[in-house]
Length: 391
Image (cartoon, rainbow, N blue to C red; front, side, top):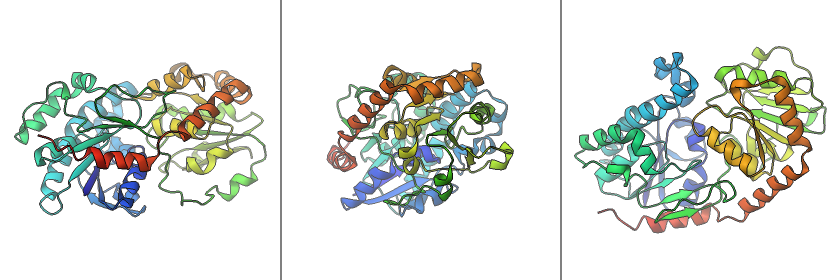
């Protein structure tokens, strides 16, 4: 089969789908990604074929593409990105580009991620099946219809498709659920497959210890990793406040500031504090004792996969729900970013370091994840479910 993966241009949308795409390649399928020209090189360096389709932008630099966002609050940005940028602007361009490119290379199947809507419309216009590979918490079509029904129906009409009340066709022929049961139960859907959450980093060579040399020179035995991901790392001065709060603590602190931020902007730091543009989580989490983050999906899944207790400072999007799920499972401590204090940060990290029951629960979920079906099983399921051609 020819299989197309249309994705929003960000690591958080690409990394969860890359292992599935690779497994489908191993099964002999012709797999291509579709994303913006600005992000295509990230995907291509992992050996995937990439079609430069859709709007040319980067989610990490969304303010450059959509300058009106620069004066918005975090809550306003989240709503604008999802309801307008994802569901209206980028979905239309991607759908038209996929349909146009189908004259040269027509996919037999589209595997979409939940934040990319052009693939759903393009698949229906082309009369081919599509499936949805989950990234994070499951948003039901009923809920999504309360937010994005209108722009998606307008897009469907522009392709001569009937409206889709309740977005009942959005998920396509089935849904892949990439969360362990302790964090999120499997959605009650007719066609759903729960598989091990993928942990992948496009910068990490497979099977190689990619920890940087300086990692081994850190002075303390215990290490706390602080990251706000690749999109929210500049939000609200939060990363700087977290680093400052932990600067006097008796453990190593490694913080990632993002590729578009100069670590020197953090000023002079003591030897046990290290700020780097980027650190591949799969390469270093086995050497970390606590993970402090914004509760983004890829970050929390990486922490769970390695059995690391977490301190969570959710900002927006699905982050509060991710944090609540880890809290309920007893493997995370959530702090309110609007009322964050240095004392509160230090106390939460100390608790995560010393709470042996929390660490045992984190290891239990780690083992739960290990026992879930792998990406090979997920690829087999996608291959099977794609036989149900839409009518």
